[in-house]
Image (cartoon, rainbow, N blue to C red; front, side):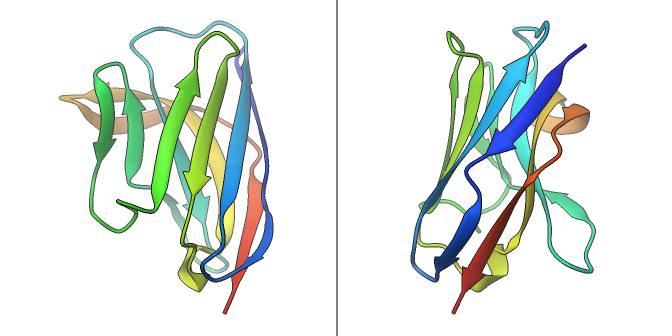
Length: 122
């Protein structure tokens, strides 16, 4: 059984930074991709468009490029999301996820965490 537990959320002002952590336990596979989903109040869950794959880091769009960085410490079985220059529209519950990629892009989530809240005030 794979378990993902997030931490590091909080409340910051616009322009601030937060580092989210995700502790992973259980058996994982080298071909899994790693990412973060976020769900803003009243909205559906969406993939943060930065994904850690076995081939490197990929971006689905430019909305977080230059602001967010994703990293994975395999020795500690941790996943991180460094978020800089935060904007009010980044406010959401953030969930880390282990997933499957196809063709180098995120295809589906296999395991989720419970989430950590990020609130950015203007």
